[in-house]
Length: 90
Image (tube, rainbow, N blue to C red; front, side, top):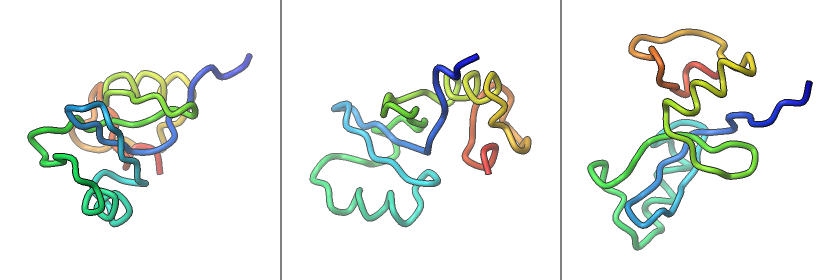
């Protein structure tokens, strides 16, 4: 059976639909991209989620369903009931 989608990494999407990725939400890599951008990346104006292997943004809920279906959950963390967190993946 072929896997259709995999959760690849953490991402945030701003109100303009632009996406920034990193290993974890607001890690050093993501923070550097935010600082280099002219867009509004304040936390109240972004949605935290993930991207799949094709670069499609996934909400935390969508990503959780995909990760569970593909056996990507390595550990459970507090508050992750139905929502994916980076800590679930590695």
